[in-house]
Length: 171
Image 1 (cartoon, rainbow, N blue to C red):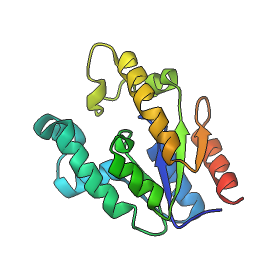
Image 2: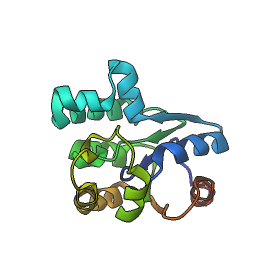
Image 3: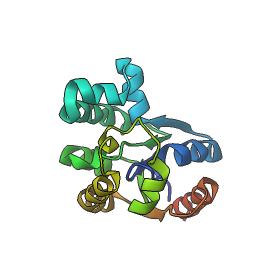
């Protein structure tokens, strides 16, 4: 059963933005991406916010954005990969009227999908695979905690994932 909105959670490289856009077209509802909303409101991109305000400053902005977006009706929302780190963000997702879907993706698939992406501050280091593995170890339990459904995206084209989501929310 679909609630008023659908919130996509999961690690970077899971396809939240791509799948969210396609899902919004399939269901004829508005798509929003919390990171893009933060960028639009601040006039600065996420890497710049990380550089100037640090991760903590970015997480504050992210929490404020989630507080607003989880109260909107009839949207598809792609959350940032780290949105689940804060307990208050998890509570917002759990207490919302939206359906939360965890787009699960293996570390290997994340690495393949994010390898050349310079817009991901947490991966700008010597060993992105170790970073992704550590992030998954920390975040996976939180994604599972807030999720109504878990959909695996490994080795699937986005349209297939969208079809799976449509099937599960309509039951």
